[in-house]
Length: 279
Image (tube, rainbow, N blue to C red; front, side, top):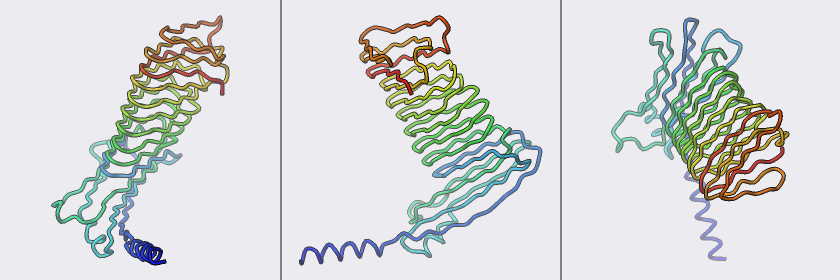
């Protein structure tokens, strides 16, 4: 009974130490005359959505968390941001300025953009998630965060470090470099080149590709509607190649060319397996 009372008191104390949140939001609108958008985020949550609009709307939200509400509000001043046109390019960035000893709150930034779907956008983010969709062209570099993209219709270039990615309905062309990042791709129809190391790549291919994967210590799993219709060039030194018909190969490449190939799948990885399966 005494131990139960001690545990209950501890839980009550922990519940009382609730983090207080303070935030401040600014909305900015930019008219025509923008040819590209750049975003440079730090500890930022970046969300970009393409739409049938003629202007760019940007929501900039400073967020501060502290056990003390007044201190959370006071520390908002250390979050700096800007959204300005430089010629015909819109540049959005944030940073944190202040003496480390004086900042006692957990500070972050939220950047939300609604933009014409046809405009290209380039995002660089450190320590935070990036989510974007319904765009023609996108370039993203994410470190120590996460990446979620959907419905990119023309061109996508992605570089990640320690940042898992989830990509859905990518068309046109896709160029991916991933280090210590897991890759999940569904409804992939783009001509795709992936260079990856120390992770996993799970890919659902819905188009002809070609799909080229150059991996190092990366398990590669590819699912297809009709695996028997594709051309394969597969190599897995120090690993296995597992085909959809159950056959397995070790220490030998697999090359298959059907009479009328639906597309090319060219995969090389090391110290891990390649698995081809039927959806």
